[in-house]
Length: 363
Ligand code: MRU
Image (cartoon, rainbow, N blue to C red; front, side, top):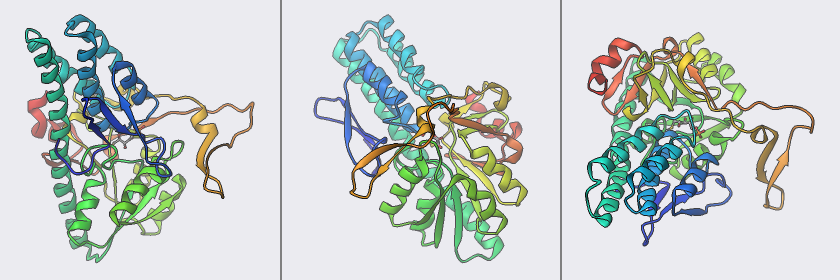
């Protein structure tokens, strides 16, 4: 498999091994996935997460399903539907499952071992293509950073990002973090404001972990700080990833992204969404009305995980028994608040004309 950084790999028995993202940054452990049930479990309990990686793991899930049902295509089709239901918002999940299933229908006459091998190779190909997307997003995004710096005469650059859209979410260097990694590589003095991203803290736990490993300057801030930073001129650009982008450019991403887009708009700060084209859902024209938004359990709001003063990993309850908690996983940022979309094909405006011009072949 291509790409330097990926949170999953195949072991010597061709089972899928994934980095358990629920435990980072305090513990680095992996989990082995051998069948469809374990694939669904790992996606829904967020052992793996992030639109791209959810799609990758789902693709491998179909291959594992083929091993389980020994070439029975109708059983495999049922497995595929079950995998698609493991999380609702990131469209990369159903995109990858459909792609591996399309191949399954085409190759159904092959001998069992060849059939299974073909599906495994398709899942590998999806992940390898994500690497190329990530590479291109890195280049196009870093070019935009350089343009902004040049036009504003900046000698250092502050980016704000929300959630985690690095290599833990899309193999190699991610989507939103890809331009940041590339800017750092180009020698740009870059600093990242990392939104904590409650309730699961993907920013504080995962983005900060990635950036520290890469030696990139960063500061973790609680989710409500972004507006203030922007008013004070401390943010030059906002870049986030996406879980589903519609034909008119509306974009679903981790809950709280919309509020950052509003603040950026009010303060005239460029707000970009970076994603591979597998995140498009061109069948949808109105994201706010039509994108399915995941609602997760209230325990994710009520409890926090961390280490105590002795270094022991613990879970703490932060809301009293008896109070309700509500846990929307995503929100939709309307296209009018988005400066541009950074994809593997280049950047375009978040509107139907620009999207159809660049991605007409996907319609
Ligand atoms: O709930 P998560 O952690 O899967 O949500 C992830 C995000 O919202 C990312 O920003 C998004 O998937 C884009 S990165 C591929």
